Every structure is written in structure tokens, then in C-alpha cells.
Length: 173
Ligand code: FES
Ligand code: FES
Image (cartoon, rainbow, N blue to C red; front, top):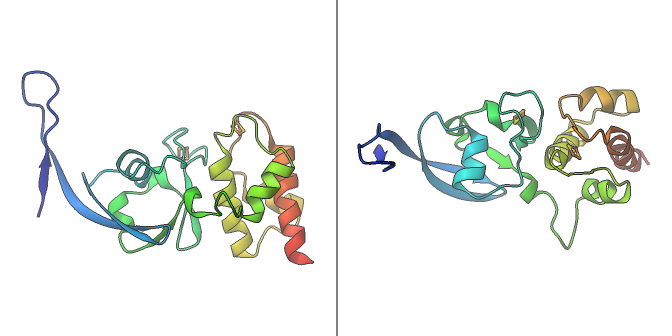
């Protein structure tokens, strides 16, 4: 049943935002939330579920900071409505590796100093995880091309490429 969220800013009632219950499967766990139907997956993650590892850069599909995996494929979560992902298998950066056992890409990013401010890093790593799963990106040129949707304002591209290639090459061996 639809519910009404009632923001109470100021004295006059503002427009009521209809919300609906939604269950998302995130990092292997079912999470239920009430959101307006126009809520993006990115806002659902960050604002409703406190999964702030996924970053908001442009909010328009241009920077890749919000990259998450849906059924193993990368998407820009700012371009997807949360309601579209019900019953899909969503993985965010919080579901990739742990502090005790980093994913090889996370370790490689540290080893190669592949970040400066780190804002783009979760998106870069999610994108690279999917790239490896896709079995593509065997050469530097291919990795550059296939990760071209993930921008880094700090210009850490050379080190990001080195980190990803280390894992790509380790998988070939
Ligand atoms: S925040 Fe989604 S692509 Fe920039
Ligand atoms: S490390 Fe700062 S944006 Fe990439």
C-alpha cells in the first residue's frame, strides 16, 4: 500500500510525496525501504540505506562515480530508478572485499597508489570488477577504452591502469 512521506518544513504543508515499500537485494542481503517511485538507485543506496561508498559525482551519467553492479554488470546507479532493480542482485563497493580480505583489485589500487582524493575509486573498482567478470580488457588499450566512462578528476589514470593491468595479467597467468 502506498504511504505518504510528509516533509514538515515551514508552517504550510508542502506537497506530499507518495512512497512505496521496496525490497532490494544488496550485497547478499534483502533491504526494505520506503521510497518515492522516482528515487534513483544511487539515492536509495546513499540516502536511505547509508551505503555511502557509492559516490554521486555528476548525477547525470557522465562520470561513473556511482557505478555499481547489477547481476554482475556495471551500471550508473544515478541513471536507474530503485524500483527498477527490485529482485535484482546488486553489489556495491561495500560488498567487494572486506577490511580483512581485500579484493585483489583493492589491493592493487593500494599497491599502485591508484588514487588521490579517492572520490572516483569505488566506481573505478566496481567497473574493473565487472570488466574482469566480462572477460574483456586484455590489453592496456582495451582497459582504457572499457573504463573510459569512469572519470578521475585527479588524473590518476596511469596508476589506475597499472593497478587494473596487474590483476588482468595475474588472471592470464
Ligand atoms: S554520478 Fe552517476 S555517472 Fe556521475
Ligand atoms: S582520485 Fe580523485 S577523482 Fe579520482
